[in-house]
Structures are given as C-alpha cells and as structure tokens.
Image 1: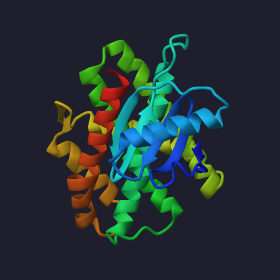
Image 2 (image 1 turned 90 degrees about the horizontal axis):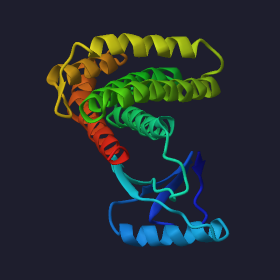
Image 3 (image 1 turned 90 degrees about the vertical axis):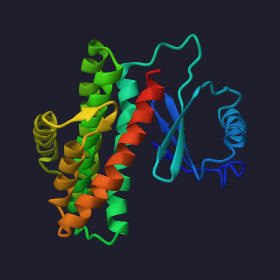
Image 4 (image 1 turned 120 degrees about the vertical axis):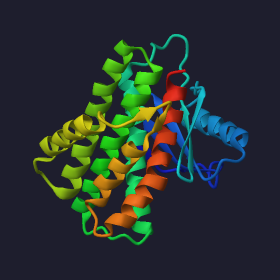
Length: 246
C-alpha cells in the first residue's frame, strides 16, 4: 500500500513511504544522508503512531535511481517472518522492476500502444524476475526453503498482477494467461545458464528476445533489455535476497 507523505520533516528526503505487511519501505530521492533520513523517519513514525516505536534493521535496495531501504527488524516478542512475508517483499521488488522496465523502454522512444501492451511487457519482466530469484535461491538457500519460497513468490506475483490488470483492463482471463506464461518461461529458462549470481549470455538474450517480440523496434529493444534492464534487475534482486536471508 502506498501512502502519501504528510510530514514536512521527510519532504525532499523520501519520495514515498510504502507499508507492505510487516515492512516499511522508504523510497528515497537519493543515496545521501541516510542517517538524517532514518532519524527523521523515526521521529515521524513515533509521532504518527502515538508513541509506538518502530523497530527495524536496514535492508538497502536500489531500483534504478530510486534508493530504497526496507525496514525489517521486529521486536523479540514478534514471530519470525514467514516465507510468504519475505516473498511479498520480493514480489514488490519484482513489480517495481517491471514497471520501471516499461518506463525505461518508453523513455527511450520505443512505442507502447496501450495499457494491455504495457501489461504484456510487464509480464515478461515478472517471469524473468521469478526465474532470477529461483536461481539465486538455488545458490543461497537450502532446498526446503527454496521449495517454499518460489511457489509463494509466484502466487504473490500472480495475485498482484491479475488484480492490477482487472482494475485497469477490466475482467478477463488474466490469471490463466499469466500462469501459462510463467509455466512456459519456467521450462524455457531452465535450459539457460545462470552461475555465481549472474545470468549467462543466453539467459539475458532470451529475456531480451521475449520483450523485443512485443515491440516493433525489436533489435534495439532487445539490446536495451540485455545490456541495461536485465543486469539492473538481477542486481536489485541479488541485493534483496542477500539482505532478506542473511
């Protein structure tokens, strides 16, 4: 859930405050003066919640030029965060990556024709993000945790994406179409290389080709995705995974 900033103390430091289940995400205007930002946010939270202090540890994530610090410390009496709650944060990052990816393509002058077209492109970004998280989880987590995380993340992505499409495009067979896409891409990405936290050339090329196939400027879009969007997405998800599961 996105909340408008009402505190003058935060104006100019934080673009928006996002409350996501048990997490508070600050999307900052830049990467400077984090100590000042955190101090002012603590004061803002204390006042807003009538003396209830915010407990957290910082997890820093960067999506393009927007710097985010995810607050994830909970008090000792709180229960350990569930896989579903961790998946919700990765789902948020994936949706942010997808939205930023479409915006970057448009800002480069490559045409998108409608909201439905934009959702098609976002679907490819979400499928890519799911595969990246799966590969990172394979390298970083034990098999039991990975087997619980990936379905939880997939369900989070499906629910959010279908809800957004229904709100903007109206009712339709959005769920089946997106599930079919995730299943198909899962089979195809499985044959491609991803080692040591980085996608191989074939992994990145395939992603570029799928996005480019939805546009008219195929060669240029494919290059943009391979060289800029894909590496940025992987970097963001790597940071998120490392900090959430450390």
